[in-house]
Amino acid sequence: MTTRPYVILSAAMSVDGYLDDASLERLRLSNAADFDRVDQVRAESDAILIGATTMRKDNPRLLVNSEERRAQRVAEGKPAYPLKVTVTRTGDLSADLNFWHHGDEKLVVTVDDAVEKVRATLGDLADVISVGPELDWDLVLDELGRRGIGRLMVEGGGTIHTQLMAADLADEVHLAIAPLLVGQPEAARFLGTADYPGGSTARMKVLEVRAIDDVVFVRYAPKERTA
Image 1 (cartoon, rainbow, N blue to C red):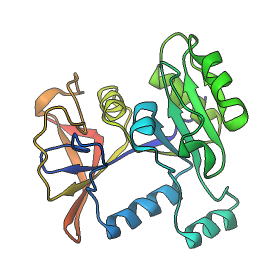
Image 2 (cartoon, rainbow, N blue to C red):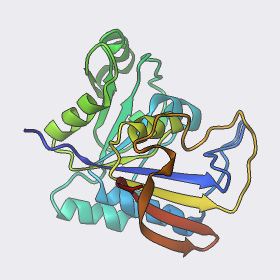
Image 3 (cartoon, rainbow, N blue to C red):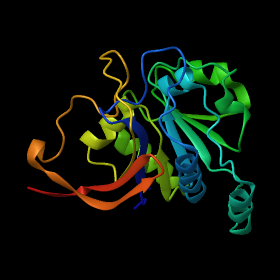
């Protein structure tokens, strides 16, 4: 039986739960010390996953920035950078995005109707697979497990975080809470409306709480819920 990866949802959000504001420029929620913490988590991961919407909006490179951490990965027999993964139902991707042109291997997980479209768009920039007619997260995690991914870091966006939490597939949640208020209903939130396991009274286990300069970092174990 394939062992699925250990799934970590990672996000920086405002006090009122937003991942960004509604402006065209990316809202800087985290600080330098917390960005370094994120870099460490990336270095400890076998793969980093984001959704196609987040890729189009933020155009991230998703790299391990520390040369020392990359060297440590290589010394441990790993690639310098984790596998980068994105998921898309529509196949609406651009070959010009930073995601494809930095780091090591890339993987696109899509559905039957979009797989040829993605392959035509990206060529040899990424491995492209379909998990069937619908994007099934159980099948996505099974596929990553078959590829030897033991630790998966999910960096958004909110739709993906919501889907994985609702399906009870997240093993840890890492939240950096910035001392900001957004208050814009059209802006992206960390989690959306869903039927979450256990309902509104189920309390997640807290694994860690600490201040990182002006950011509060909280680590939860969402599968360890109590009434």
